[in-house]
Length: 146
Image (cartoon, rainbow, N blue to C red; front, side, top):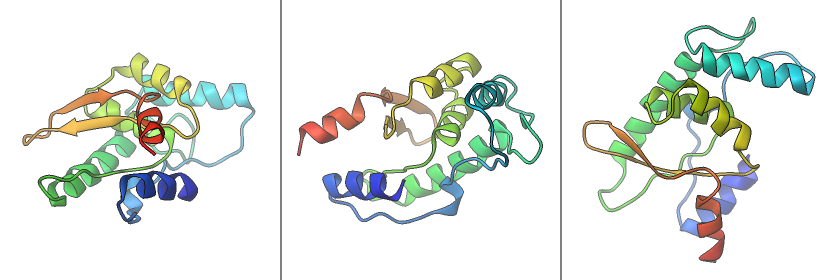
């Protein structure tokens, strides 16, 4: 993850800063791939409930991440942007929390994520979100500008 952040930040000419609130979701255990995908499916479909013991719920993760995102963007220069990098579960939980995707859309988005991947999201003054560039398209533009 750190290498991805440094690469994107370097391409955009910004200095990365770590914020623990933007971490991936809490979750313990090692699962076979099919079991893990099923857990993440439950994570998105029932966001108020952790899909497994010692896992964070999508609602808790999304609320945490969106609060950080709003604070970080509010502190950014008016003509600047904020680059936030994290893991796919918390990013899709944030899109769910922001009402950019619904429950099924969050899981479908998670399933389509490339490693690494990025999206462009705009927050207005009252906190409404618009997905300007979905996952899968933003990194191609950054790489093309190099």
